[in-house]
Image (cartoon, rainbow, N blue to C red; front, side):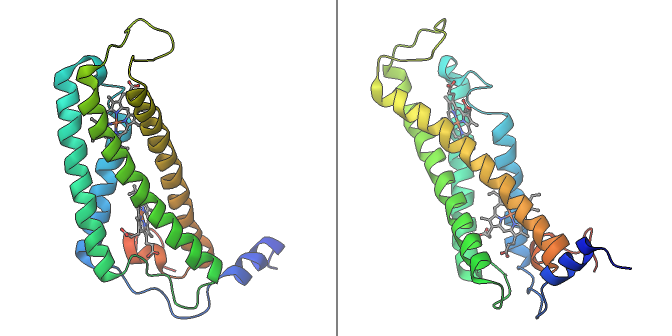
Length: 190
Ligand code: HEM
Ligand code: HEM
């Protein structure tokens, strides 16, 4: 006998045609840029002490700008191909949420890269006490850019976690082919 939970799941399941797959290049760009971004969350200007190590700052700058350009390429490509494969008859709230979540990911990423470039440009002219418990330089603009760089990067990470949860919602609850459109048939064939 089906439990109440499985009845609810069945009621939430998508009924119409499933999502068309994203193209090969779009999927490749999604995986490659996503992996590089996640790497950048673990190995970043703070973990490398870039404010006090000019060589680390230079490599952060090169990596960050290259990542930004790759994301720009991906955004331009996906704009031509269509950012989402949500079925046309998906509920309006799903359509709106997915559109704004994808826009916010690109927007926050652009801010993190541009603020990173600003940090690299402003740092050489600033005095920072490496022993201070609460970080502050003698330049208010650098302080502002550093604070918002960290806040935007952390918000971006949160958004990506929610994005993965949303993808799992499509895989296990809606079963509308949206997961498969980007990730492929693994691990769900239903
Ligand atoms: C395990 C990790 C991930 C999973 C399972 C996943 C899953 C998906 C799926 C299923 C789609 C298709 C959505 C649709 O067609 O409406 C998609 C698109 C998208 N994903 Fe992910 N994703 C992951 C990681 C990431 C990361 C790290 C980013 C950060 C940049 C990201 C950003 C996006 C964006 C912006 C789109 C819209 C298509 C585009 O414009 O590129 N995803 N993702
Ligand atoms: C464009 C080149 C970039 C430069 C020059 C740069 C530089 C820096 C610097 C100097 C810090 C250290 C701040 C401190 O010690 O308080 C930092 C922190 C950080 N950066 Fe970047 N960054 C760049 C791009 C990026 C990108 C693309 C990401 C990806 C999300 C990123 C993620 C982070 C994170 C997560 C932190 C730690 C924030 C925290 O304190 O919680 N950065 N960055």
